[in-house]
Amino acid sequence: MNETSPSVEISPWWGIWFQPRQTFRWLVDTDPKLHFWVLAVFYGLVRVVSWSAQVGIGEIFQPAEVAVFMLVAGPLAGVFGIFVTAGLLQIIGRVFGGQAKGPQLRAVLAWAAVPMNVLSFVGIFPLLMVFGSQAFVSQGSQVAAALIGKGSQTGLGSGLSLWWNILESAGALYYLVVAVIGYSEVQQFGIWKAAGTFFIAVGGLMLLALCLALLSVPV
Image (cartoon, rainbow, N blue to C red; front, side, top):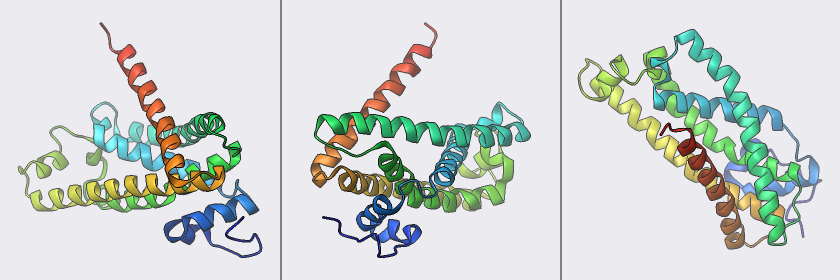
């Protein structure tokens, strides 16, 4: 039985933070494709920006090239990642009796990422405002100097880095909780069954990524 009638209006932007199960049910009952492309693009952009700062992509590319890379790779990574993950969740879910369809699973992944993306953006935005393109350079940069205690902005750099890491971690944890709740709702699984099948799928993707990375390493 649906916990929320389609006639009862819910703001998914607010509900996903505090009423995730009701929000996912409302989305399934109304339009699981609601804002999907916007969410997928934003998800990819935030993830690629965060990854670029973590690996120091500015050491390889010029600032303009970094910006182009993020603008191109971000949306592609977001859309591709959600489609692949949703497809794997659908396959594994069917094995355990789940009947959720692709659009419903993609809605879960896209909307579950909203709190994580917001927290990640709030975390990295001050770092970008203070250090600009130098935030994407990990060696010999103003950011690196500040973070390891060799710059005049040591305290500021360390504080911004800590702030970013805390919000990144909190966002990732919140994402897992909300995604499992959403997966449980659309598949009509118990929460532990949903968590088990969800992490089987995520673990499979991580193992595949690790194998591809190892294969790409020259012998």
